[in-house]
Image (tube, rainbow, N blue to C red):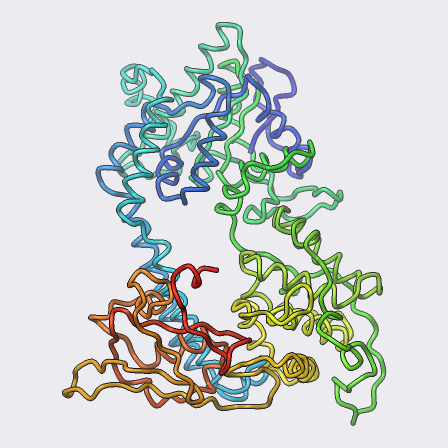
Length: 627
């Protein structure tokens, strides 16, 4: 998003290259970020974004800006003016509510279409046991989205604190621009620039409110840089915005990546060299006396900052910022058709032989779960610190290593398990697609061992000992994989491990059980009224406990994310029980799905416990609960 003028202080305009070198650009941009002469200007969109950003990521952004030399991070007067208006209009909160509502509507449409499309034949071909199993997954996702919405919507306290932080920061950095001369010129320059497609602002419609706001900010930047140049200081300029319109920038059609390969650019994967529009460079560098101009999004800026730290062997200080500004597309190339690994030639098999014929390998001869637990924290750490495109390359290298027998399949399974336990963004959701793709490029028996290493870690710790409580994230992955007949051998082995360890479970994966007794005991009420839950039992084991504080994260109100006065459906409870006790939802009776329930304020669920009789233990107190 920048440009290096070939000859400093020349008035000549230079067009951008058609194929651009990504590494050279990253190196140039990183050097500009380190230079004391560089000035940063913040668009209104960045200030509004900071208000809605999570507190930890916002703290990293503001700390990095404040670490720059004095007067090097500036807020144009017009940007501050727009921020003031948006604060009064509560824009940050309104935008989030509108986005969430739009997502909910679109997902509801998707669910309807999916339900229309699905039948047993199609679902079986895509790895589901039946249409019912697929519909259950849809329902679970619907519930999950409703829970995720609660994180996105801004709470009032967060909004007040974040707004104050941003206002205080902006007040430290506002330029002292006299806007009067700029505004007077707009009658002559504004319409001309827009009608002749001169950047910035030609992407804004002339009749829109604030149609010339970008021009005012740009004039402020040019005047500020020109004043510095006249005082003998030539500046690099970084304008930070969330505006993706093309009237500010010139995107590349093709880039040369770090391996020297020319490929189509992809802005979403940080694989683009998006330079400032040549006319803006001409005005700032050729006329105002600046040096280099970069126009960047906050996510790309975080990527370059992180890249600079890694190039110097230093610890990154923008981890939360980087994470907050990139979509969770981890392992996306592995899970898609773009993985560039040549499959091993298929081994001839008898037509009558099953694809997963039991071999005499580690899965059958292993004496204990310890054989499937290999430390992979180093690989997991490298992966989590890497940029998205580097993460995909790491996975390709690991898969290739398994193909070449340089990496044990168990090792790859442990890496996946570590990443899921670490809550690496998107990993848990991608696992089914990952394993489907692995089956295309790796021998099936090796894939089974990879899966076994992943699911063993859900129930056994790094020493091979039975966990007191299974990891729910990994356990949910195990439930997904168990639905696939091709992993039956892996689950037979896991079941043996659990049985040998005397694990207590309401539902034991690999046991071949397809039904768990599920009963909601409730008080009789008048027609149409909410039924009050007295107890929930699984295989005659009570799983509801009372006398919990209402603030407990084990309370039914907290787990369901619902107001007890409004109640919930029996289906909500069935899906909650499925998640909390690692039981496939289709194995629980749907008898109570259509009924409406409420509960006592102090009621909550006991904890899944592999070492207690019946497989559950009551929560003694909040301290025990949060262990």
